[in-house]
Structure formats: C-alpha cells, structure tokens
Image 1 (cartoon, rainbow, N blue to C red):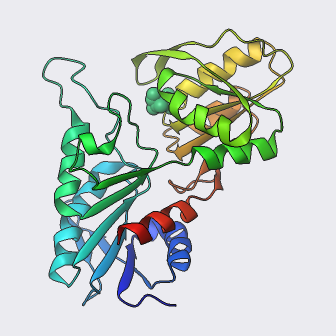
Image 2: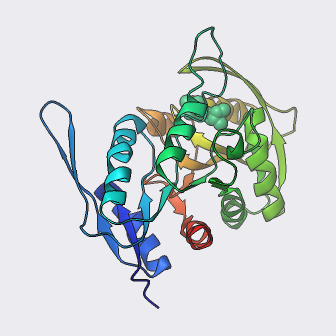
Length: 296
Ligand code: R5P
C-alpha cells in the first residue's frame, strides 16, 4: 500500500540510495532543490505542501555544508506541514571528536548530536563512531537517536566472497563491529591496536596471529585517508598473508585513499551504501526501512 501521508525527502547527490529507500518504504520521493549563490550561501526549495510524516535523508560525509542544509531544511519542512520529522543520516559526522584531547578542544560529538536532536524528532544512523560512549542516548535525549549496524551484513558478504577469511580489526574501536561481523558469518577474528600521530600518520600493532598463506579481510567502520587500512595491509602482506581485502561501513575515501590502498596491495575494497561510492557492495536499505517504520 502506498503511504501517501509519508514523504521521503532527499538530495540529488544521494539519488540512488533515496530511490531504493523510497521503493522499500513504498512512499513518494521528492528532492530538495539546492542552489549555491556566488558568495557560498545556499538557497533550498522544498515541495509545498508537505505531508505530516517526512523522512529527510542526508548523509553527513563532508558534513559542514550539509549541516547548514539541515538547519535550513528542518524548520522549513515544519513550516510546510511536516508534523513528524525524521532524519536518516546513514553516516553521522563528528562522532570521533568525543573528548577534549587538547585543553580547550571542542567535544564536537556532543554539540552536533544535540543540535540535530533539536531539529528532528528522531535520528536514524548506521555505525556511528561511538567509542568512549556506549550509545547515542548519552549525547541526545534518550531514545531519539537510533544506531543501526552494517557489521552483520558486511560479515555475511565477506564470508560469501572469501570463505574462511580471517577478519582483522585494525584498532580497539573496531572490535565492536568486527566481533559482530565475525559472529554473524562464523569467521575467526582478531583486533589490533593503533596510535594516531596525525591525519596521515598512524602506528599499528597488529595481533600476533599467524597469517602466513591466509586470506585476511580488514574490517572497520570507515576509511577516511585510508592510512589505517594501508598500514595494516602492508604489515599483513609482509607477514605472508595470501590476500588482503577491505570491508568498511562508510566509504569516505578522502583524497588518494582508494588508489593508495590498491597500491599497497589490497585486492578487493567493499563498502556498504551509507556513503555513495564505487565500492558499495552491501545495501543498508532493509535496515533503514525497518527502523524508519518503527520510528514513525
Ligand atoms: C577510527 O578509529 C576509525 O575507526 C577509523 O579507523 C579511522 O577513522 C580511519 O581513518 P583513516 O582512514 O584516515 O586512517
């Protein structure tokens, strides 16, 4: 049954995910028209009027302009008729800045989460980088944020592509996703440790496991510069791994990350479609569909 009192609202650069999600929800889809003025300001046009239930899809990769879009689009949506307004941000930015690493440093995680919670009735996201907190409830009103996980789907994909693979998480934070992926797929796993010295400088201590002749798949929540995965892949290949593949939830792949990963000897790179990218192999749409229907 077509849900006429529900609209999925999205932006053109996420049209593929939006169309797939609208089909799964069996609801109409419309796009926000977006114009950038010469001075950098944005002009947004939303469909008028809006139905009472609106789901706004906006992934927050390269987040700063997109946050401004949300700050303008959310109150406009309410003026145009939205009563229940959900934000689906498959990738939720600023979650790694979760403590005052340097005196005076903003704990952006808290502020961005709170800001979004003030504009939307609910937020649905996938594998937010929650490291020093256990759930989004610690940074927004309880129950307002829902964190889904692509780890099981990635684990099942990996098990299908590379039967018997050894899953390795490059750092302690990845343990939450790697252990879930391994359990879902019946695969063995191990976790390394990481010290980050700068945006592109990481020092990795991989687990003391015999990888000689083994097919290894590195699994993490995201690849940004790719340096974490590159460092891990180089060590594993030097230790005799038969192959190294990579699976991540969020394919940020900034700058030269993807060619550099391939240059380091990584065979396959797979990601979920939370961030539109050529490596997308696993769809989170069924997860999002279920969560949205529950949250409406
Ligand atoms: C942080 O620990 C995350 O889980 C990723 O490992 C990290 O953000 C990847 O960053 P990059 O690709 O820049 O090394």
